Length: 179
Image (cartoon, rainbow, N blue to C red):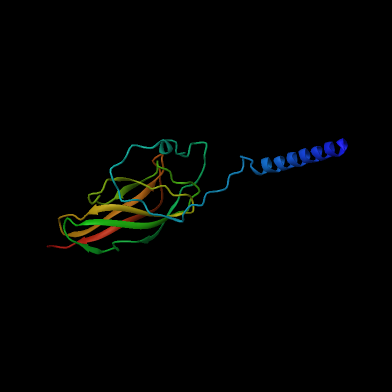
């Protein structure tokens, strides 16, 4: 009887150890499931810049050791088609759909900058909202129509954290009518 009890305890211990080993193998911490990312990112309405969060301060930016290729493709005008009429002083919220077709993720260090034409009341440097590679994004800039009648074209382009331009340029074109 004592031998059967010992065999039963040994068998239970062996089963427990095997079960524990299977659980530990299944819970290995070196495998991380990818987090799904949305295909389209629409930035919030521009507001005063808050202090950067610790996560923003630690955003990776390409270094000279990293060699990824940046590229932006213009996809579509979402608001204010080219040649749209505007009243003098009218507030205009322009949106473009673009795609990050490069190999780099756009981090907080990326910008959009005026490269040609009037700034139309917008800051000449705007944040290029983060977008993962191969993702589409919506860029938005708020402009103010000039007081003088005429046709105005404001051209913009993306810049990497090192200040190098990349990708296709995009623009807003408006016609300010006399009052």
